[in-house]
Length: 235
Image 1 (cartoon, rainbow, N blue to C red):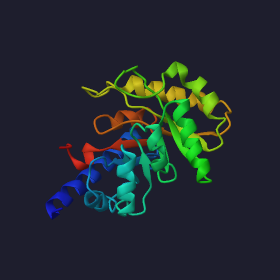
Image 2: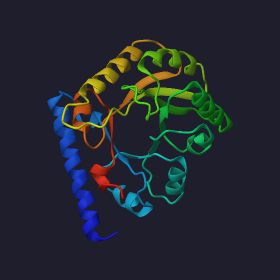
Image 3: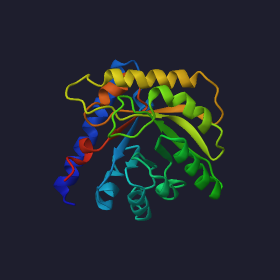
Image 4: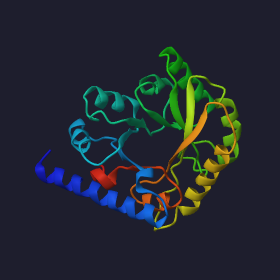
């Protein structure tokens, strides 16, 4: 990649960091409470390796095999990588033990397979429960009203630990449009945190992407997932 392309990515990351800091201050929060995840789906190992040297906390991949390939190539520069896309049960074996956190646990069957793969490797895999806030058929995630029932089953699995919640609201067409969804996820997060489930340690609220991350921070996000805002539109 050329020097000009590197400069553009560097400037984008700098701008996003400033926006994150301002959004945190306006919400009465500390900027260091919020992690910047670079959603590096379809990006080359070279581009990811360059961005690993910037002010990015961690990376996220949508496909387990892409995560494996870039990790083997050393593209993440030693920074953590999360599995943020929908994870099929037959792909869990690629993500478990490599992904520091799997964002998309959304069914008992998937959680059981993650647990099985983790136990084979003698480890505990950290996961988030994905919630489908708007009931969109095109998106995965457990319905909000079914979340506690799922947690009661998942918390019995020794091979994983629930660290929080994740959601992908509908595409926002204007500023503030997704705030009600972010607020709803935050309330679910707080409610679950107040209950004492085994294997549940609620520390991560993953919400907000390139078009709405400031609103997500205002509503309590601890991690925002930025793809096009860093790397530009996908081809």
